[in-house]
View 1 (tube, rainbow, N blue to C red):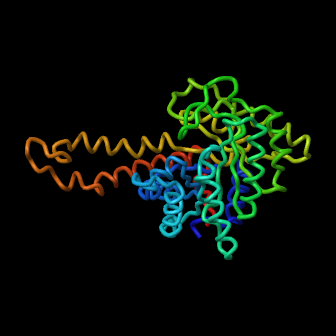
View 2 (view 1 turned 90 degrees about the horizontal axis):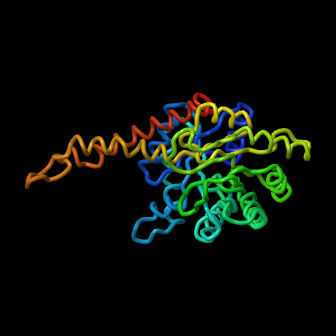
View 3 (view 1 turned 45 degrees about the vertical axis):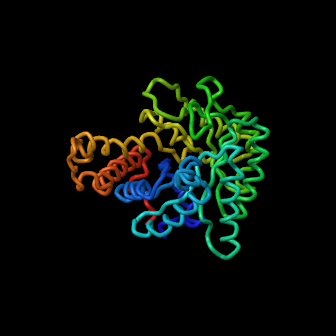
Length: 340
C-alpha cells in the first residue's frame, strides 16, 4: 500500500503531530522527479508527500495542450503503479491552486476522486490545496467551505492558505512585508468557518514570514513561534489542545532552529521545491560542462552517444534530487518513521 488510503493518510498526519516531526512534501514535474522523490523517501525510511502544482501539472500535460487535469491524473495514475516498488507510504497532493484556476484544476480533480469513491475505490489524490491568499479572508474562507465539503465527501483532506506567503509561486505573488504574519483573529475566523475537523479535516498554511523562492538565511524574518500563539488562541476558545495541523511553505534557506520551532508548534508538512529543483539540475549542469564535446557535435564531430543519452545524465539528476529529499527527512525528523 505505498499510496496511502484516506485512513492511512490520517494516521500519518496524526503520528507526525504527536511525534513532532513533519513530512517533506516534494513537488514533482515528471516521472523522473517522482522516482527521485520516492527514492529519497525510501533511502531515509520515511513516508512522505508528493505534490503537483498547477504549473507542474500543466508541464506534465505536455506543451501541445498544457492540460493541467490530464497531466495531474496521468502522473497520479503512474505513481499508483510505480510506488509499489518502494518500501514506504506516500500521499499524493496538489499544491497551490488560486481562484482563477480552481475550475481547471482542483474542482475537476475532486470530481475524479468523487467518482472513484462512489465506485468503492479510494480517491486518486489524498489532499488538495486551495490557495486563497490573494483573496479577502472572507472570500477565501467562503470558497474554502465549499471545497472542504466536496473534499470530505471524497475522503480527501483540504489544505488552505489563509494569509499570504511572500515571493512568487506559479503566478501567485505577494510582497515581502508585515502582512506575512497570520494573526490569532485570522485563525479564529478560520476555525469558525471551517470547523476543527467536524466539517472535514484540513491542513492550515499559516504565515509566519514565509517566502517562496531562493533566499539566504537572514534575508527573511521567520517567526515560527507565532504558530504557538495561533494554537493557544484557538485552542483556548474551543477547548482543544493544538487544534491545527500546520504546513510550512517557503522553507528554502530556513535555519535548523526555525524548522525545529515550527515542528514543536504543530507543523506536519513542509514544502520543498526550490531546493530539489536545484539538486536535480546541478548534476546535469556538471555533466554537460565536463562532457562538452561529447554532448555536442563540435566542429563537425559526432559527439558521444553515451554522454548525451538522457539516461546517462538523468540518473545523475535522480540521485542528486533523492539525496536532497533524504536530507529533508533528516531536517524534519521523519527519518526512520515509516509506517511499515
